[in-house]
Length: 250
Image (cartoon, rainbow, N blue to C red; front, side, top):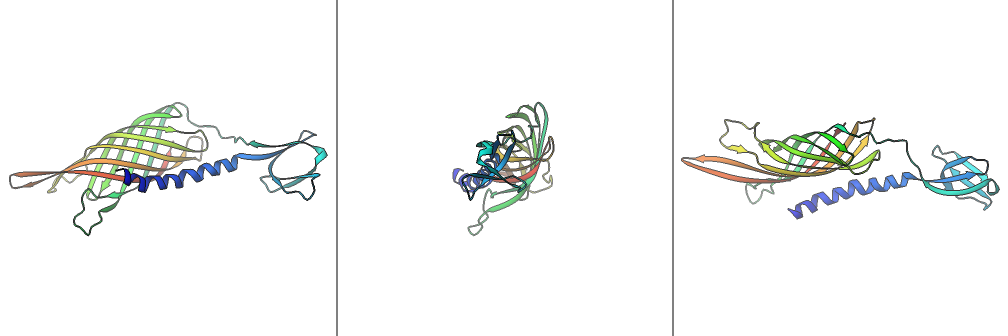
């Protein structure tokens, strides 16, 4: 299981989160020029042709030039935004849809690599007790080739930071039902125990609404029974999938 996680999970995690954190740091820090007359100019300091001049460009690309004798001091400060963290206590929903990528439980023959790309749809309904913890019920529709399962799991979610673009985590554990299976099929399929961790990003668009992108891992067990004469053959399947999903949170 560990080579599978390293080969898929770690590279995408680095791709999503490291650039986002660097971008946030770059946008947060500003140069600040404090003038003796009480004015404060925030922006980015520019090279000056003379040591007696201070040049600073604002976010609107306006260039200001001041004499050193008019400047009280120059500093570099972290600029706070007017964004206020929207969640306190109360109901929270996270709904997302995407694809699951992994391997079939069994390859049909030596030439079949066994790779599989399927569909996953999931919704979390819970109560948020604090920014870092919401507890609720997760339900989903997952396909594994011809098999369709309905996972029902206890889930937890939490925001790691309180910024407008912020990482969040999730963890689900429960059981998958086979209610969408064909009752007239020759194979009697059933679900089983599952567990699934998730890491994602929230992009707030309104007060409590956020667009989300996440990367998850699903470990799902299932069984398939076939009858041959008076014999019943039980096949135990074990699916391991990487989940790429997008959706909304409110």
